[in-house]
Length: 147
Image 1 (cartoon, rainbow, N blue to C red):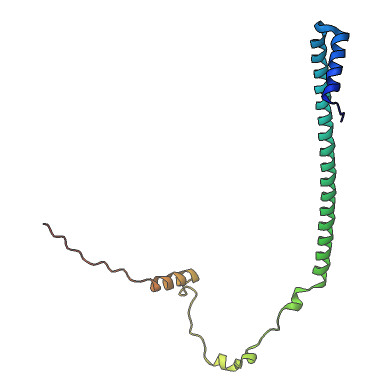
Image 2: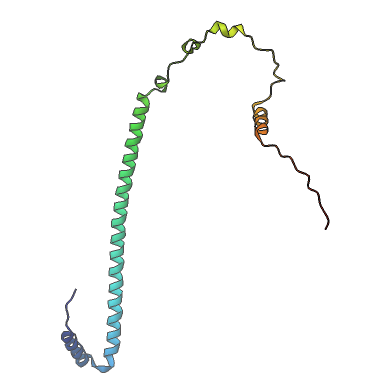
């Protein structure tokens, strides 16, 4: 900020020594140093507050942009949802005639009469299938021989 050369600072020190004297010069130098430190801390605090305020204003601007973007996306999705009907996209229903099956032939072979109590549940059927697919464990007899 200020450009002082060594010779200018030496001249100021000699003038201060002559004007203030050797008894008061250390007290005045200490007092001046304290005030310079306070001024530097205050300026650093002001700089930090201004930087934080600038960051906050940038963040609030970003937040506003994000909320506006989210609102526009919600509105676009709502418009698309109102335009698209899910029932229109489903494929046509197939009939047995489409597969070459005659409906009258199906009724020709009646199903055997089985009561509801005799039918296994899906869980029991799955467990029995799983049990049937497992390899059988057959323990082999091992003879112990004493030596």
